[in-house]
Image (cartoon, rainbow, N blue to C red):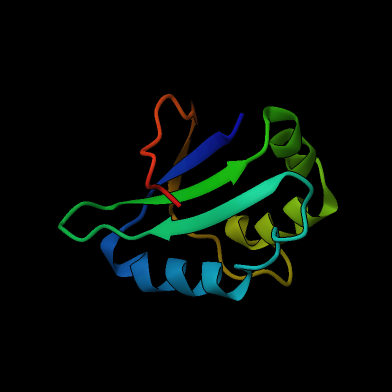
Length: 108
């Protein structure tokens, strides 16, 4: 059963382009992770400041294995700043978890 993880990021409006740039730089970093099925960064198309990082996983164990991996630590090291890392960003994050309840027969 596919597990969907949505990281809801509250991003100050002026930081939006920087958030997009940082994700674009590491967009393929998770591609080889066992159980990974897909990634999207959703930018608000209105005045909201909540960006959504949507990932799909084969199961919860695959997601947890990725979170415990060196690749996860490496990919997230710049979000908090620190020596040699990009400056920390004033972003709040909330992780949401979902499973697919119903799918359209025509969905890819």
